[in-house]
Length: 276
Ligand SMILES: NC(=O)c1ccc[n+]([C@@H]2O[C@H](COP(=O)([O-])OP(=O)(O)OC[C@H]3O[C@@H](n4cnc5c(N)ncnc54)[C@H](OP(=O)(O)O)[C@@H]3O)[C@@H](O)[C@H]2O)c1
Image 1 (cartoon, rainbow, N blue to C red):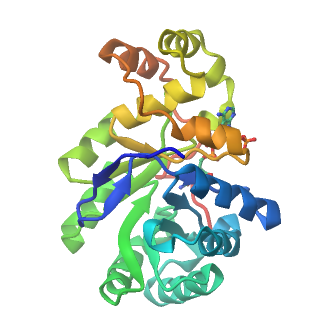
Image 2 (image 1 turned 120 degrees about the vertical axis):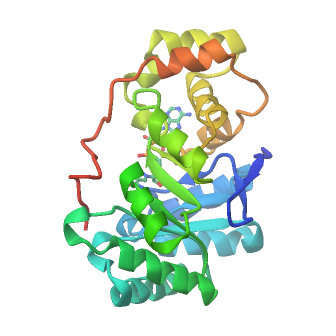
């Protein structure tokens, strides 16, 4: 089992430097894969209403026998924005998860044309005050949206989960996060296994440290202060992905990986891309 180091979020929560993505993990095999990830040492699980696997995540949490050590994340989908709908969405997520609390609750996408993310966020803060939610964060928010959120509510989200990998290192957003005590979480941290893992600079750096290309990339995330949430259905790859804290990339290696920057891979600009 791998021990994953932790950091402290702005609300005092102890938070892993690396977590587990669950998109596409469903049904009985999905539960098995999530249980295997927990057994490997993962303590942060990332789900969403739209992954249609909250029941599987809840089942895996119960099977693990260590519910109190886990941080279970789920997200408000676009169709549930607005105060009343957000409350109903949270209650439905809790029911599907079969848990008494959502440990980390995120707005999945801001969907600016709906104009409801502020009301959604305020309701999430109320749910937190009532104990149904542990920590409140967001996903796919821009610096301008975060600025407005903080100005209007006085409460910075504890995390902003965004697309991040060496093709899209998110430097300016990470600087904004650091200035406001917001932890970055990287979604699709391996760029969904695209050609990234075969890039010469990635394979050279991995070879220099005697690690795999995946491990070099995930270490890049953690050294930049972001929590990557790689998904793998395979127990051996789950361990490989978690076991990245026994080596340290040099500054020029981190910079070389960031030098692969070419922009978003999936047209997910939060100012225009919306998901319901
Ligand atoms: N907030 C958002 O809008 C948002 C958007 C996208 C994703 N997410 C979250 O982020 C998580 C991760 O992103 P992702 O699933 O899109 O992509 P990812 O974690 O970057 O890549 C997953 C892919 O890489 C493969 N893989 C994993 N470890 C590997 C290894 N060691 N060697 C070779 N291949 C490996 C997996 O295959 P195997 O399973 O076969 O190993 C899978 O095909 C998601 O599961 C989800 O929780 C959030």
